Length: 90
Image (cartoon, rainbow, N blue to C red; front, side):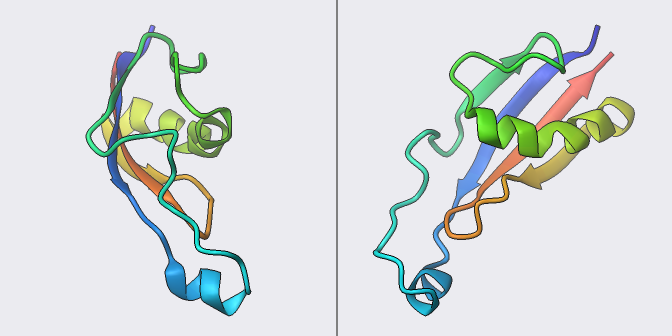
């Protein structure tokens, strides 16, 4: 079984894109905090408290981390993406 952790490296806001597409001001994602760590007991199971949408975005990179050990990836929210470090071991 693959175990490890997913760490929130950085939450961002792309204000230029928000302004360009006429959306209201958006704050960084409030589901995560920078530096927050989520233990991974099973690389297929959503960690407790983790965003389901972000987990779905990360699944291909989680599989890559099973081979490489560590991968940096982000969710696909273009206005306020979150960057994660995925660290796994067999």
